[in-house]
Image 1 (cartoon, rainbow, N blue to C red):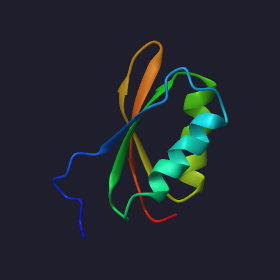
Image 2 (cartoon, helix red, strand yellow):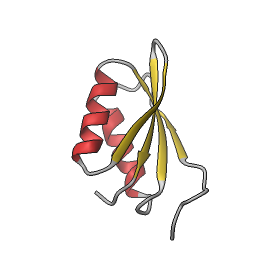
Image 3 (tube, rainbow, N blue to C red):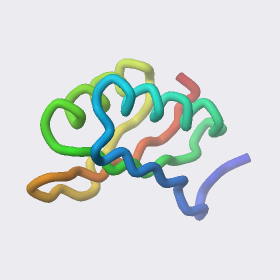
Image 4 (tube, rainbow, N blue to C red):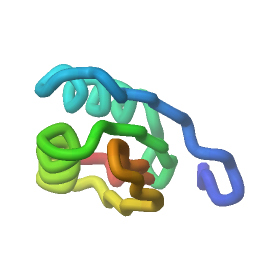
Length: 81
């Protein structure tokens, strides 16, 4: 089933330390079907770098859709990885 047109699930991980934020992202993605999306809010710096690289390494598509001084918003497309 395609998720085209559906709103992405949301996960606010601001204030969540590494590696807990990455683990919570992976768990949320495991509940999604391929091509479904997860919107993730993270703190800038190490959380941003670790989560983006980890999710991409796991085979998911990660797009940065908003950036502010202290946070970043990602749109992660579950690719079944």
